[in-house]
Amino acid sequence: GRSLSKGFETTLEWRRRDAHRGLSVVGNYGYTHAKFVEFNDGVNDYAGNYLPYAPQHTASLSASYRFDVGGGFLRHIDLDASWQGAGKIYWNEANTLEQDFYSQLGGSIALKKGAFTLSLWGRNLTNTDFYTFYFKSMNNNFYNHGKPCRVGATLSFKIL
Image (tube, rainbow, N blue to C red):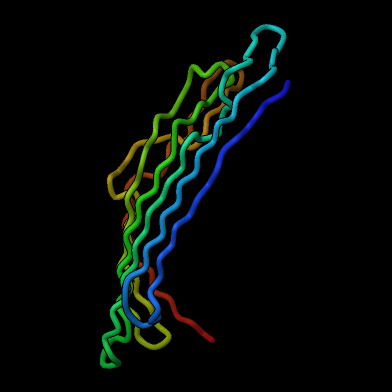
């Protein structure tokens, strides 16, 4: 078989000049148009169908804000928010199984003092239900679900 894949990706970024305070914003968008030009498995002709596992659109937007609180108890407070999305994704050559565009939200707050950072974070805060992978084996369909809403805390220590 043969396939043809075209697309583009772009990133826009705005960063604060002062590393100790202020706002940063980053946005990404990608488009992929990937189709079979020729593909016949001996039973079916898939020419003109989209390639499986290739999202047509990918996008993300993130914003960070740093507060410099001096040097008393805390040195910095960092706030981060993010959004990301992907889709439509076809899971098979026949284009009969698909994942529509889906998106997720995330965020964190990090408290910094000296070499220590305590981060409270959340991922997939909208608890979006989506698939990350599909395959068929021995006439059975297997889907891998994306991770559900998660929240947590991370304590880190920087040695050098």
